[in-house]
Length: 121
Image 1 (cartoon, rainbow, N blue to C red):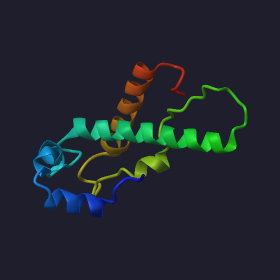
Image 2 (image 1 turned 90 degrees about the vertical axis):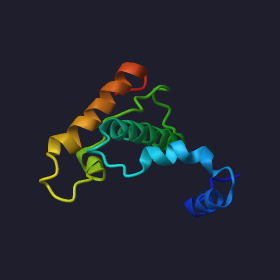
Image 3 (image 1 turned 180 degrees about the vertical axis):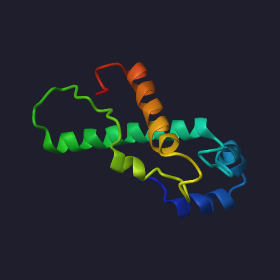
């Protein structure tokens, strides 16, 4: 078992009669831009934190040092990691605070409030 590649998904989407099932999802991302859909952008940034935590879990299993069995998996993304999410074409589009601080801080606060101290650093 494996996930479909994007090409496989796209081919199935275009050739199946049931592609309308994806219309709401497609519409959500049609013409998406972080500046015009900031809530969706925050959701995506929050998911990025969760995915990083999943990767950390895998790495911990590989190195299994026998430390605390409930480590702090959700950690703030580093400044370097945040740069990968910089969507600006030029610095005049938005400030560093709007792009590299606010959405990430909001995501981290949300996760800390909803996951508690066991999983969040």
